[in-house]
Length: 229
Length: 317
Image (cartoon, rainbow over all chains, first blue to last red):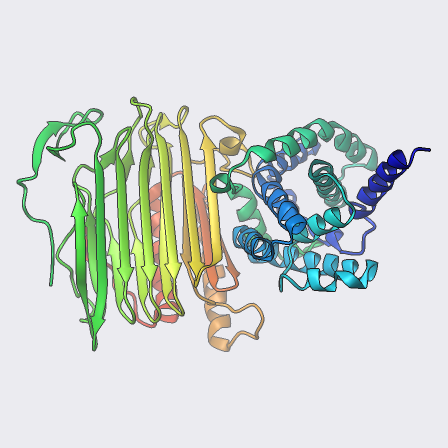
């Protein structure tokens, strides 16, 4: 095998690692408002769950997380610490609710610990942001693994979708098979969203997901909950 | 010290291209209205007063009121034309100096009409709040007419322990006139920074008829969206709440739950992020959302601003 091909396979597996749902960061504990949407009857069946996920994918990831992912990726690459801190803080300021804010900080901090576990020399990088977001830490991992940003973002998108479907399967009587089928149908949208996020200018960043923000805030008051967001 | 525009000599009457009403416009700019207003709020001893002001075009502030004592200034912001057509812009800025306190409101809703010129309709609000200062900013709703190309931008810069307490209510289309928002666009941004660090950001980029307008994760097909925020830790996250805070929280949540039961078409939700307390509301009638925010303000003001509620007179008319 050519060494070039070998190194690209190496990168592929690193991407799978970085995006694995088995990564010990705890994202499975969060639904990002989906639990409330299911509980309150905003989403009653798998087609409505699909619409919920697609909207969050297009406007939440596509207009907020991913454009900032790209900026953080290039900032890590250049070791531009001011930009890293700035974009990390901007992303946190966009988090709509207390739950979404703490989810990002908690999962992001778990990612930071994972980084140190991978390689103790990453300590100074991880210390750049006192409250690292998931996007910030995922982008750092992608830079360490020498991934291309478009591929790295696809990994990020994939884990997010997989997690949303896992949430829906736990709350809604939606079988595994149905969830797995939905994940397949989302693939073309995931690719489209990844591509479109490259065209979002700084002053167009933001999701505008009012319903999601309301769901998340109302989830904070929900009486019985499986998920932490 | 009060510099309020009273002269009409710069204005002439013309028929507004959309409303058909006679309104005044500066003679020197018939095609586009770029109205600007700057006002400084200062404080000396225990007295708040209007400092430097500057204006251009049809935007003005009325003589300040002191309905709750000399230490808090009530200001009415007037935009006599009442609305924006394509190419018009409004630029409003307040500089709230150290330790001063003011409350700003508007006597009527802002209107952003159907756009026939292709140039966007822009409203920029900039608020600077210095350390120890407070501003309460309660404009009436902005009504985005079908076909508008609206850009609404609010930017708050806090210094030290400056406090911003304010809301923004936006009608997307006119529900009551059965004139839904089926064409045009709205870009609405709201940013708050404290000593340069962003603490709250929100941006809606809405194209008429998009899934963002109809979807349950978006605007759910509703016509009025509101956000009310106070840049304070009303219910601190990382420390135990006092009995007073717990009681207030219980009271608000109870009131909110009851309101939503009585008004199933209106959603209200509140949340506390570090140093920003946020309420979001979604419904079909601006009046109802304003009522929700006014009620919450009445419950919260003693805790957040350290004084009992004092309803601006103009709200009662």
